[in-house]
Every structure is written in C-alpha cells, then in structure tokens.
Image (tube, rainbow, N blue to C red; front, side, top):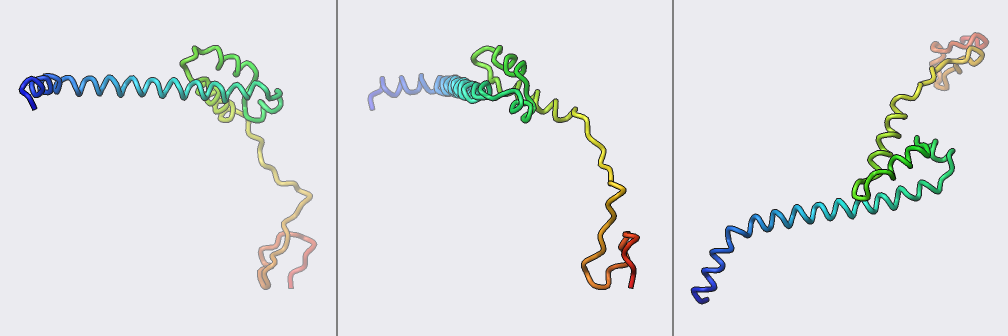
Length: 124
C-alpha cells in the first residue's frame, strides 16, 4: 500500500461510522415506507367488504375513510386496529343467566349422585 492510500483510509475512518448510521436510518425509513404501502394495499381490500362483514371485525366505512385520509407514508392499519380494539373493549357485555327451566344433570360417575340438584332424580 502506498502512503497516499493509507492516508486516505485513515482520513475516511472517522467518517465511516456516521455514514453507516445515516445509511441505517435511511434504510429503516425506506423499510417503514414499504411496510406502510403494503399495509395500505392490504387495508384497501377491506373496502370490498360489505358493512356487515366490516361490523364483524369491529370496523365501519367511516373508519376506512379515516384510515385512508392519512398521508401515504403513514400506515393506515394503526387507525383500523385502534378503532376495532376500542369498540371491542367498550362494547356492552350481556349478563350470563341460568335458565330456571333447565336443571343440572345427574353425575355420570357411579356413586357421585350426591351433587345432583335435579328434583326429579331420586337418590339411591
């Protein structure tokens, strides 16, 4: 190696780390943009579903409009996921009630009938 080549390498060494850092940041942003475009394409398929199918997954047409009103570089699925999760968390829960006309069945195990609550079953 000549002295001019080694001098250039020594001069470029302090710049290698910042250049690699900038390159990695640029690559990460490009990958995020590619992912957002792919998710935008995938979410566009939801536009083909009818309102009943959208309701089954916790979305509405206005959710789709809101998601696609975001800039192209933003991922629309983040809005869709947050809206569906919000609806799932805040939906009213139906109380679980036992029907009074259905009684507990007797035990199938021999000798275990003492837990039976059905009035029509006699105990041996």
